[in-house]
Length: 216
Ligand code: AMP
Image (cartoon, rainbow, N blue to C red; front, side, top):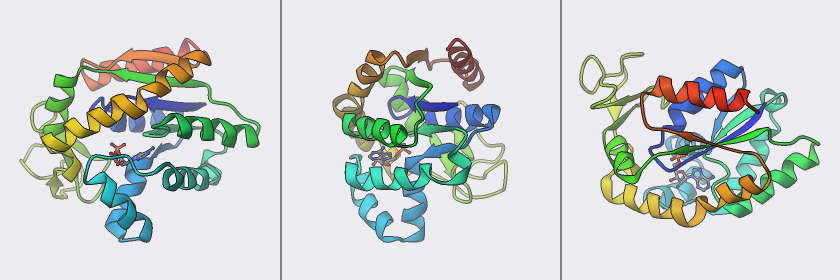
């Protein structure tokens, strides 16, 4: 299956992407994770991306599109993938459509996670990630680690992303409304959209997503 997961920052995309992709045996591809790995490694791409990420702004389309084009041609993506955080603008969505047409495949479903803004701020400001592996994600309220500041999975140090600070979160929400929300209409027009309520426990949301995918 070829799936796109879309939703505002804090909707639980990262968590759901990992779980749902695991259940479907397809890779979860997160542009945010790819950018963060490049920032950590100090690559040219990372240095460029960080300028935008730290300010809560989107990285320019030409940078992001090139990156995803390379990633989608890797062998593990041949039979399917779940995209988390891409596309995030209408030009990116158009470019993805062209890219996939070029290899004669299509998206199967676009899942929109819906959540209200207050909930987003509460979720994001409490989020803590593991320095060893950014997919080990905790929350000070809803999923606290057994020992504060320490990853339950591998013992790594937990940290707050720079772009998870309240002021930056508000800017990211504005970016979402202005630039990303229009892709929901883009996919609705193509009959690909499934909107899923993202309030509730992570397990409940996972089940809703899987149900929406099965219904297709
Ligand atoms: P995320 O982990 O998906 O919240 O992404 C973190 C940050 O990476 C975003 O706030 C953007 O600065 C950047 N980013 C991730 N995906 C994209 C994308 N598709 N287009 C532009 N910027 C992106």
